[in-house]
Amino acid sequence: MGRTLKAALIQCGVPADAGSSVDDIKKAMIERHLTLLDEAAAKGSEIVCLQELFYGPYFCAEQDVKWYELVEQIPEGETTKLMQEIAKKHSMAIVVPIYEEEITGVYYNTAAVIDRHGNYLGKYRKNHIPHCAPGFWEKFYFKPGNLGYPVFDVDGVKVGVYICYDRHFPEGARLLGLNGAEIVFNPSATVAGLSEYLWKLEQPAHAVANGYYIGAINRVGTEKPWAIGEFYGQSYFCDPRGEMVAVGKRDADEVIVAELDLDRIAEVRNTWQFYRDRRPETYNDMCAQLP
Image (cartoon, rainbow, N blue to C red; front, top):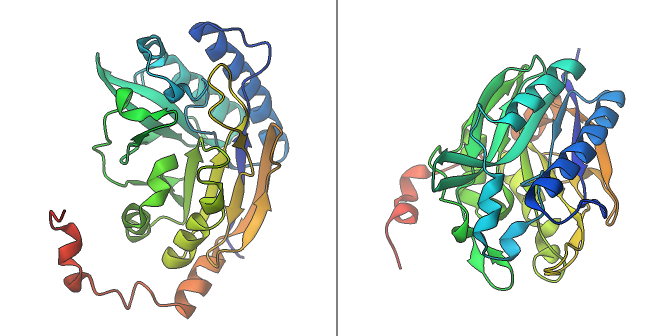
């Protein structure tokens, strides 16, 4: 019998009635996502990934210390514990992007990984941190990750995480494959007019180069007061051949669900022997401190 995985992605905008305080927005976003998680479970999802910084707006559009109020420790924080309860309730694994506090003043853009029994398995910290105009001031909020590129055994499936801007760097995508990933989730917050032309180009290329599935998530809508651009949704799954399996709408809160044939990974890798034909001994210059 073949191996399959029913996986889901959740894309969501900030509710119009969320209010303006940090606490009100967080509460509204969590409540909205709880409804969408119920929907994912009702559709039979075995694992679901939420969008980058899911319980807030994309606050990196400005530099304001008030957003530090969103930080939580992992796994001790309230959101991780809540999602452990939801995972256990629905027997559904969850990848949960959280604004993480290690100690006061040291914060990371992180995703916690929880299995279907509600067990916390570990976390990935975003390694590549952008800092550029207009409206992507991430170094103000996040320290670069220091946990490498872990792969988690989630109920028998090898799961990796890459967060938003990470997707522009093929090195980490390759390391996730070398570490055994069968599916890599990339929770993101990306806007039209900047990187949309790369959205369905880069990550299918990573899937092809590494022979695994990718679940790419983007939020939706225009977030006020910043209006840095339209978060254009279109969350998707692509297979190891780079072919789209399921694609979300551009402008709607949505649960995107796909049945993934995990046996296709071996089929593709046995056709395209990229891991066999690698020449890591020739790549030393890649890691040199070049300008």
